[in-house]
Each structure stands twice: as structure tokens, then as C-alpha cells.
Amino acid sequence: MWGRTALLGLAAAAMAATAAHAERKMYSYDPISPDAKRLTGAGLTVLFDKKLTGAKVLKVLATGVPVQGRLIGGRERDLGPGGLKAMAGVDADADLYEIDPKFEQGKIYIRAFCPGAARLWLSFSRLELHRDLRIQAFGDDPGGGPTRVCGTLDFSFRGEWKLPKGSGPDPMEDWAGDRGPS
Image (cartoon, rainbow, N blue to C red):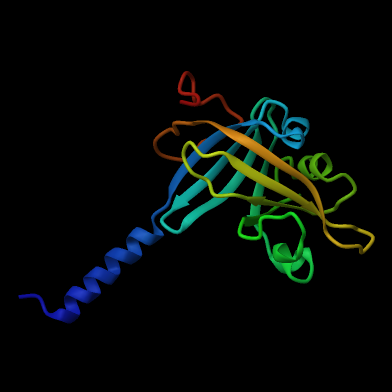
């Protein structure tokens, strides 16, 4: 018979393994707000890892052109005192990321989304199947002024990409064939 300690240990190990498991997903969105239409044209595709505790966005890709940016964890303190909560008209509960300017076309995203900024942060509403998405863009002021809201981008859910088995996709390659958004 299993002892209580052994059962508790087994249950804890199973929960830890489940919590650590992430499923890679790729959703595409059509622009609906003026900022989203102006900045993304045909829309945006988001590559992310879905976990039990939420999602971790890895990349944003322009749907119509081969431009992608890698995201790294954003720190609210970099936005200024109080972070998102201190900014008017901002979703304070959104997930915050920063565009990595050194990877792929990160500098292109910074120039396009927030001209004059050296850094770009993007906050994401919850990523869920068949749910619309709101992204807010924030840029720094290289002159030392406060971080500013550069745009609010609203998107309607278009579809989920079926990812190939094995290694992750290279979104800049036509690996999907006829397996586009469903």
C-alpha cells in the first residue's frame, strides 16, 4: 500500500510536470482599430507558448509581409513609476513584453510602432482561441521624458495555424503549405 507521503510526492510531481508543459500555438488576427490597420496592414500573427498559467508570447509577425520581432519579458518599472497602473487609458492587467531590438526586425517594429523611441513595449490582452486581441504599444523618450502610449491596436481573431510536428516553425518559411489559418 502506498504511504501518504509517497502519494503526496507523486501528486506534487505530476502537478509540477503539468504546470511546466507548454504547448506552442500560433494565432492570426485581422486589424479592426485605426492604429492596428495603420501599423500592421493585413494583420498580425502571434507565436506563443500556452501554459496552464497563461501564455508567453515569443514573436509577433506581420501577417502580410516577412517582418517579425522577438519579444522578451517586459519590466513594468522600465515604464516609469507605477508601471501600467500609473498610465491613463491602459489595461493595467495586460501581459507586458519588450521588442528585442537586436533580433530579426526588432528595430523596424520600434520605428513603425513608436517613431523616435529607442525601446518598445507591447502589452497583450489574454490570448485565447476565438477571442479578439488588444495590444498597446509604449515607447520611451530618449530625451528622458515619460514613457508614452504610442498606439492601441485592436484585432479580431482570424484563425489558428497548425504547427508542424517536431521543431518549432520558422514563420518566414512556407512550411504550412495549405495548412494556413483554420
